Image (tube, rainbow, N blue to C red; front, side, top):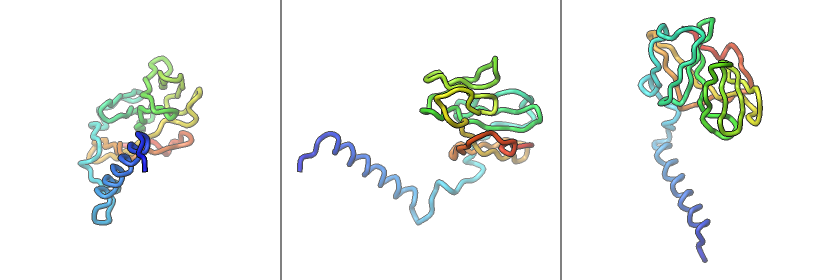
Length: 152
């Protein structure tokens, strides 16, 4: 059997994925589903964020928006089209994708294509006044709903 470059790389990827799966499923429990407050991104004290402002967290890969009513929303920096990093648009309060010109409003909803769905969001918990964002599990959504906001 002749092994060309494509087949070789495919086999290496399969082996690597298998090894990763063994580590994640060790003892029959998925490490992905178990987490504690220590594994969440601590964005800071809820009362230190001004209303109607956007805060970028490049290390956490999200924008934290506090809306006028005090609700918080953590939106992914990745465009839902092809994963480019979006920029905040200070004029509109929304976001622009520099790669393919998708535009999003302040809630992360699509204003112009090629993106077809809103920016992903991350679950937020507020414990002892601290905003904790779970950046490991982006939530895909089809639209904005006020129930997606978290209040202190």
